[in-house]
Image (cartoon, rainbow, N blue to C red; front, side, top):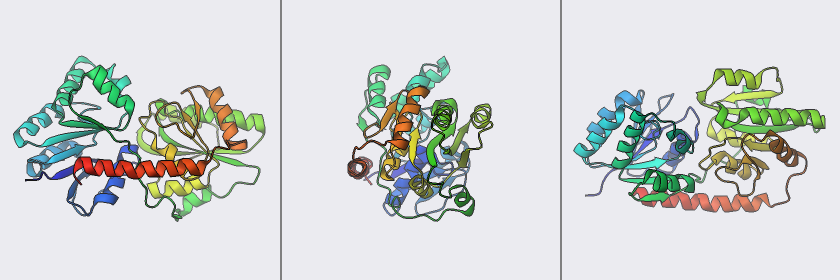
Length: 354
């Protein structure tokens, strides 16, 4: 008898990469024989959806009711990436209910964070890893780390998290409050867009410093638009980044279809995260025709690069993107990424039995 497939993970808002991953897969596979066990800030209803308002309290009863002999593709963060007390219970239920546990791993920060785990958390992590049926990872770096550092013996499939986006080329109607801040700049002005959250590893401070340097150096009114995914925050860091800079606009929890409309109204995109496994927003910006400045982490083809934290190099590359964009054919890279996105979707569907 064929196992039932379950996709488990967050659904936006908030709009982090993993929740967009689930949202995209839902749009493509909601009419197939797949169950979606999802959680998020707002209740979501749809075909084959089991929504959890409190994921930690509701997941275990749900798996007891509906998980027997199933194939559960797990995109959560609390069983592997941030292991806690749920791990031994989950592992026990896996044995009792005989379900397969397919771990989809997307967190590029895990290898560096793992070194700082205390002994208890490391033990929980190793218990979880040993119990996974097989892994799907979105980067070569995660695959190498699991093999060489952790010693994983199970099957590991590399399937990047770039998928087709049906609505990426369609004009979107923005809410009035967004329209008011996105009115076209004067011809002498520029707008830079960046996506992330207000914690140091996402590099918003570096982007702000680079833009500020260019404003003084070029005398150009360069505005900075920060799209805050809002799944993590350091309020002191946020205050420091924004203090006294009225040329920065922050939009929080922007729905994914609207992101493409915002990108199309920008002049350059910066991805400042230093630990990207892939960096989906980089490719989305290329799809919107923008020059992209990005850290040397994750996807880098067709982009202007700098080392995380190097504000001087970031400013140089951003100046090039704004005033002398590279002649490399952006349409060609857009096409390459589109073909890869379609291949990734087919690979994942085949792997999970959709």
